[in-house]
Image 1 (cartoon, helix red, strand yellow):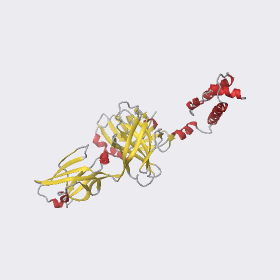
Image 2 (cartoon, one colour):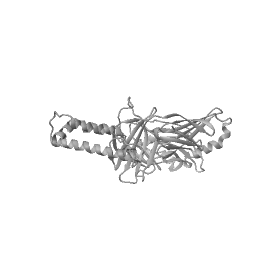
Image 3 (spheres, rainbow, N blue to C red):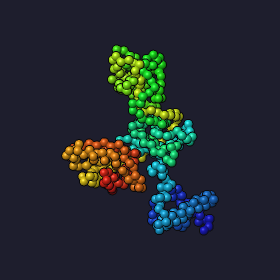
Image 4 (cartoon, one colour):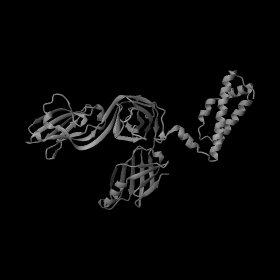
Length: 421
């Protein structure tokens, strides 16, 4: 093959076109490519290009053709699976989801990479890879704070091989008219080590706060400060505020009182300003002495707040569809399932003549839960369950870790398996 032949091929073949052929290309596709190469050789050339550039272009094209033909031939006889090769290059095995082409950003020793933004009819789910480059700071719950409006009521955290790497999924308020437009947002804080308590006694005696003139952080609850406390006609009034604005993401919890005998006095009334975090609560004590009372706290307690700037830019949302009308049999009854990214609803008909007599069934369902099996064999355990019904119908609703509905292969509930077609 002489230089003139090389020149004709370089003129006729756009090497960039080969990027359009995925590993799913068939032998027919490859035959078409080959025929184009041969046609290019035979076709006359009218352009004069630098010979070295033509040779480079041709060499690249020929290598791609030979490689594609070789891979397809090997795949056809079962040496390997082309889909497996594709997924090994373009998917993240830890998240089992497509990796977004978003940017990786780092600040304060924390590296964040956007995996994707997934949009359904109700919500936008932002999934991020969070890595602690210094180590030891991502244990327990991880919350991400952004002015864009993450909804902390859904916060799915899945750790990798260590607790220094996690996949965090939050619901994000997009605040944009076009749900298909690229999404950008900025994370201003990462809150870790969050734990939830109920009626936890604090080393905080009520009478010590009556004379304060400036905010005092509540011992044991670093995100909460008491602004003022007053006692008049047997009524104690306490004004508190979230000392860490980021902690408002998951709420400031609330304070109650406990006396030396262990009797709890709940707040009689209260109100809170969601913008400022200021809360006012009153407690009716009557003639009881303030010396006998300490504060107790119920709610989430933040561990470590890492403040910084992590700007995520131009992540293209991916549309996801819920699975509707999946049918089968559960407990001998007709069952219909609805599967969204974060919930599983199982409806059965008929219901139960005496709903309260099936407590054992409810207990079993609550203990065993529901198991979602994905197409790759991964099993996802459903979370909290709510149940309701009457003689005509019964509904079991579960929260689930973030799951792409299109990946669901089957549902197991009360010993019955329903395949998703």
